[in-house]
Length: 125
Image 1 (cartoon, helix red, strand yellow):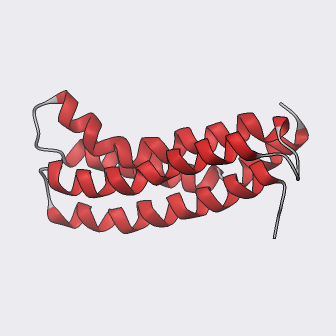
Image 2 (cartoon, helix red, strand yellow; image 1 turned 90 degrees about the vertical axis):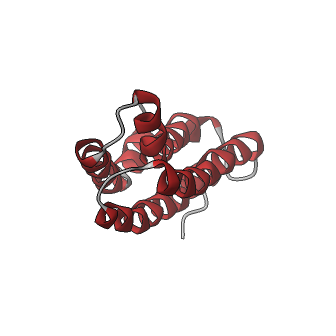
């Protein structure tokens, strides 16, 4: 792992911890007995972590002027977060206050999208 990759990973550590905590809360309060429905309701937190990991792995293989296939794949992965957030709203059976955490998930996902996009394009603000 290069120093650039470790620097990028450090920017994303707090949102990833928050997403993992939200996954634990969803799993604890879930009233579904089906494991597949539980996994579907947790995908809104799993996908941003996968997408940010993709950005960390591939940020060394891109440059400021050449980042095209990686940025398209990364953006597509992170867009799935919104889809699964809406889907988990309908799949999750449990206390309704847990649904308020979806706003935190979307905020963390937007932050990870921003940091991952800047890492892949090498265009930091």
